[in-house]
Amino acid sequence: MNAVYAGSFDCYTNGHHDIVRRASRLFDTLYIVIAVNTAKKRTYPAEMMAAAIRAALARDNITNCTVEICTTLVAEYCSEKGIDCFIRGLRNNLDYNYEENVAEVNKLVSPSMETIYFRSDTPGISSSMVKELHYFGKDVSSYVPPEVWKCICENS
Image 1 (cartoon, rainbow, N blue to C red):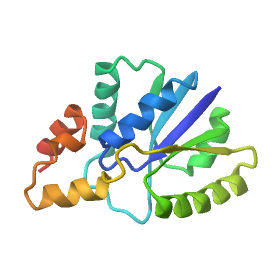
Image 2: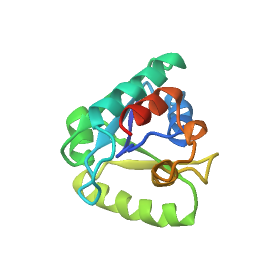
Image 3: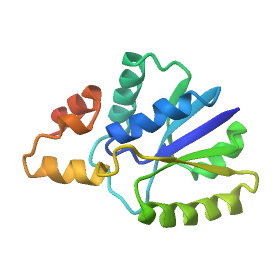
């Protein structure tokens, strides 16, 4: 069985990486999809972030993941690939409420889609928090994989 873990991953954090580690143990292939969020302007180029994610996966010897960039609806991407499981991370009840709405929309586009939630072991870490702290000159290297930290530094 295959699954997708999609997000803007702008930037990909240790929290994301933890969910990938755990989900990759449960599925034959985990597609990590950098998706377009029309409500957000990217801070880091998607291609560069994809390369950093691939490098982090290789460093941790996670071999059953594919990293791709998606410019369509993720539910349509899943239908095209025959993927019926959507992985989402939850930090708190606010995430849950948001994710339940996303799951309902995904079901409208792809009725067989199931959403599986993983609780975050790092609830305080978010891409937005990392970007905000970095913008104000704080060291965020402990919140992201080293490969992503390099990407952040190259784009500052």
